[in-house]
Image (tube, rainbow, N blue to C red; front, side, top):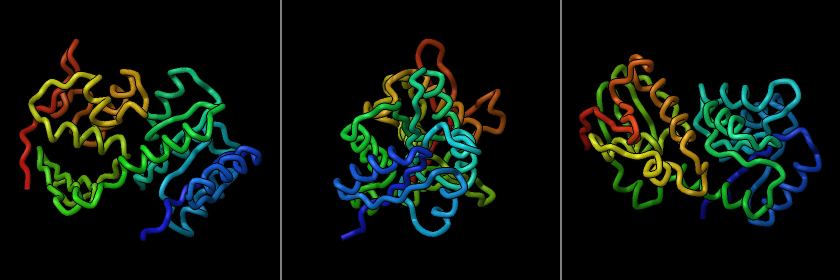
Length: 237
């Protein structure tokens, strides 16, 4: 039997860390906690972490900056915790690379449900792993067994869980117009951000990684009033 998922809580409020720790331990998770970005990086270096609960407002380096920097080197799932509930704050979190967000105050049941949903998206089931495929398009190859995006020069580009799910939805349905609502269902699920701009933000971030000129995208095209279409030819293997 595999070890329970290891969750890292990054929040400068000791009471919140303790409350969330108790709730997660009760559900069978392993839990570590950190009060700031420096302590978080030390824990990441010391052992495997399966998911980070990252507070937006932290002393020193804030959560958005931490999230953006993590995304340059890691695809570890991140759920952003924030006391702010405005849509712009949620969009900023997703834009920086968070896989989901949860405004404070939140209930333990909702938090646990979101953690499990993100972990499910991040880990393929056994049958999926055994029947893994490769999708080739333009100058890229997507390896679904390793959840890895590789450029034709051999460079591996990290993808967040949300970016991977969105790209997989596209490569499995090339040359089809997919509405924002369809992409929400396919790539993020209704447990995640249920508003159109979440998909627009993820598309923008994905374009920056796969398009030669993100300002003039050739692979993911916007269909005005309709959604998006993946125009590249896709090969499978």
